[in-house]
Image 1 (cartoon, rainbow over the protein chains, first blue to last red):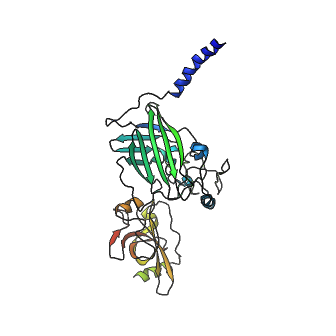
Image 2: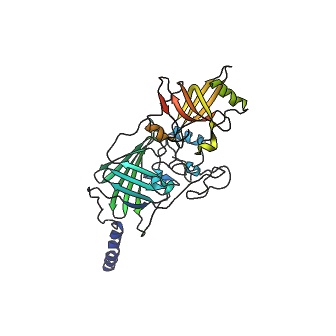
Image 3: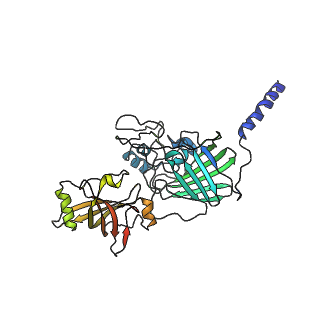
Amino acid sequence: MIKILAAIAGVFLPLALVAQTADAGKVPRTPEGKPDMQGIWETRNAASFDVSEIAEGHEIPYLPAALEREQKGPRVDPIIHCMEPGVPRISYMPFPIQILQKNGVVIFMYEYLHDIRTVTTTSRPHLEGIDFAMGDSVGHWDGDTLVIDVVDFNDKTWLDSARHTHSDELHVVERYTRVGPNTINYEATIEDPKTYSRPWKISMPLHRNTEPDFELREQECTEGDNGRAIHPPYRPAPEGDIFEFVRPYPVK
Amino acid sequence: MKSRLCLLAICGGLLASTPVMAHHSFASEYDRDRRVKVTGTVTKFDLSNPHSWVYLDVKEADGTVTSWAFETAAAGGLYRRGIRKDTFKPGMVITITGFGAKDNSHTADAQDVTLPDGTVMTLGTENNPG
């Protein structure tokens, strides 16, 4: 019996190990010796519907005042009106992301709304006296991890369709670590003293698209006469005046 | 001149309306032949995309106040010219030239602004009429 179990383990344990370390191949590097982040990447989650899916402990530490503000605020996902998704949401929109890289700069090309983020990795100072939907991104390398510090946000974007919001004091620190040929580990720390009681984290893998000849395509968003996207971002807005996403779980 | 323009707008029988916030062409909203020059007190400055907006209150000769809304270039373009969120502070008296709205509302596409210290800055989109 023990022999049988050992035999079974002998067959399955290595498989399990292979599954865990399937992406343990060599991390490609640029001529400058940095991890090469280039390629087309995708998420495979539904965080854009509800970011708590990828949040540490599936919990968002809301301040009571922020919840109250949220209840009184807009009730339609801004992307339904073709607004920018903001950061970090652009990173988990269900559309491919192409990363280009050269010494001192990493360029993120998003199929969604054909957004581009040009991130210098020279730790330049942040812009002052302006707010953007996508904020101001400044990068640096922490060893083999690309760290992007993002501030200068407006308060008009949501983190997901589930109406998780933020204020203009949002501060996002993204960390991209390429752990193998086909995986980037993505982490972001989100803080906002007007909205959350403490900084909180999200994490997810970015998977490399290995389909031959895969390219980004045009993705447009145009408002129709009813102010809703004619080309729905990824699901059609229902008929009627009110489109309200009801959270499927109690807010903590 | 300022009062005449304001008067014209009022005679048009239209009250100042909330400006259309969507992205649109100059020609669809503004009249190239309707030049306006307005001096007023800043009530709000919204440095944003797709276009930024400067809001002015103008005291008319009869004591009434007319609220104007000036559409300007996109946030990034204004930033490159040195304009920040607090460049036009509430209470500041500034003069803006531009092109009036086709509907005669107190809305205009801004061209230049003159600050209290005499500094003149471009508010319009580069190489555009406004």
